[in-house]
Image (tube, rainbow, N blue to C red; front, top):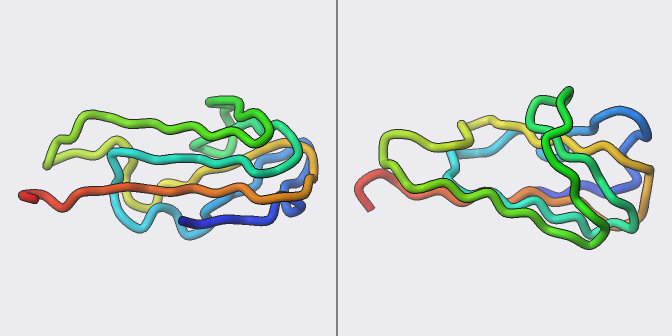
Length: 99
C-alpha cells in the first residue's frame, strides 16, 4: 500500500499517488480516499476516469488470467481535488502465474 498526504494534492491539476507506479502487474486495485474532500481519479494524469467521495473507496477487479493483468507494472494512479487533510492510498493485488 502506498499513501500520500492529501495536502499534497494541488487544486486544478492531477497529483500522482503512487510515484513509482505499481510494483507488479495487478488484477485488482483499491483506491482509498481518507481525506476531507472528494477526489477525481485518473490513470493517465489527464483523463477523469472516476470520482471518489470523501472517506470513500473504489475497487477494480478483473478476471484472473495468468498471462495478462488489467493494470501493468508501473501503472500510476493520479488524484485531483482540493488541498485537504487526510490520506489517499493505492493498493494493488497480484497473483504469480501458476499459483
